[in-house]
Length: 135
Image 1 (spheres, rainbow, N blue to C red):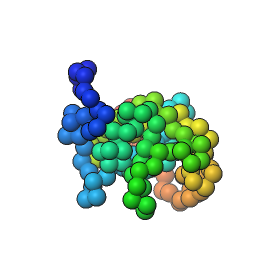
Image 2 (image 1 turned 45 degrees about the vertical axis):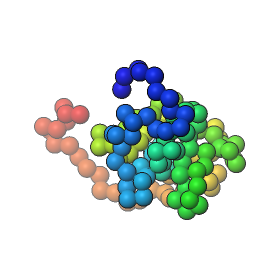
Image 3 (image 1 turned 90 degrees about the vertical axis):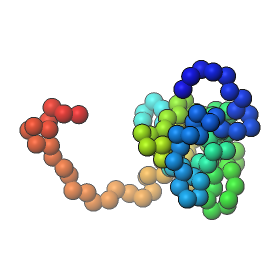
């Protein structure tokens, strides 16, 4: 993106909007990650307006699929998410938001939403000798 001025107080910057691939409900998955430890905290959903609010306020805003309303993380709980970086994936169908998380990210009171579910059994993959040098 260029550094041209854009008044994003009412709509999402079209340079961002054109790169997004929404689902059939107009949403994009947003992976929320602690900026310094890289811990994945949660996954939420954003539409264009939630993205605009996040980018203009510096606090993460989601679209609640169950309540059908916007919610800014921390307004009720005090567990705010302060944006440190915002990136689209290569397909434009997911967002990575690095945040400085205050308190718990999960509604259960846990730091991460991935603590409650527990580890699932997994088959461990191994690289071949040829693949060892590749990243």
